[in-house]
Image (cartoon, rainbow, N blue to C red; front, side):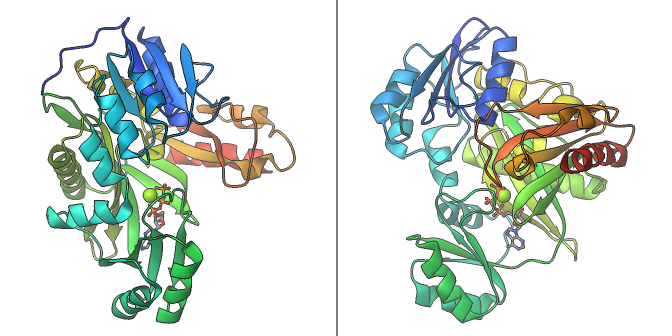
Length: 378
Ligand code: ATP
Ligand code: MG
């Protein structure tokens, strides 16, 4: 159903007030919207930016309904919200993306089965519910990654295995009722493609972003990705096709693998802003955060052309072990900006902020964030 445009001045609701909610809230406030946020943490990163914050668990459907009251549209920064809470929102205000799309994406096995059933390209995988079937899957697939179907992010809830016995042990260690066993792929390049789509089906795909992970966590991303025109066209068509089939309103990030033999596969989906597009505010006229606001408000989607190569580098809590890093060192590198999420407690692996940079070339933008990061880590 096509929604009427929601003009600035209206109130938008956000399920989730982490860094993605915070940066989206900043974009919404810039455009003149009021913002209501629901998050389990009272001092969540979006709190200082929101007009109103509700502190409650994701399972609290009454709190989700309270969030939706008075909102012209509600969006989310986290997909793992129980369906009853999503339905409680959708009964009161337009929820974008909708309940069914989020439900498909939020559980890894369900998401992969849906992608496979709809003919989208995936690596070999099996859904498993027992340690013995996990061992069987590893015997069939060879070296694999066992991933819990619920609750994993930043490489958590994943175990890399080589033998059926290791597979059996991994299932027991993960203690998840459902896991996915994925064949370990020979990846040449990782990219992601972010799509913004409105309720009337109008959609745009950002140029792909090239990503680098360390131990399953994103380290840096850069745009343009440099994958070549044919691969770019294929990746864009794939991402747009998935967003349309899912009926996404808002944003959908499709993480993809390009194998050494040139095969393009889908890794996973995220129906929200994505870490690999944090530099969209440098590389494009429209940041992913502003684009999300435009999409859920049925406004004209903003331009996604590359105005200047850009890159991001994550700042994880590990950097804080010796106290607050000296950000003057990063800011001294030309083109570099520091983005901090206002998280009070740094833990190893926790995303505390990121660095962004522009550059005359993608390599220069990437070198700048890497140089600034090295200066902080020094
Ligand atoms: P995030 O929340 O950061 O997206 P996640 O916890 O959902 O991560 P995945 O995207 O499944 O984890 O995997 C994280 C990274 O691990 C991938 O980006 C890739 O580098 C590597 N990886 C995942 N699956 C495979 C695979 N089947 N073969 C080889 N490497 C893989
Ligand atoms: Mg991922």
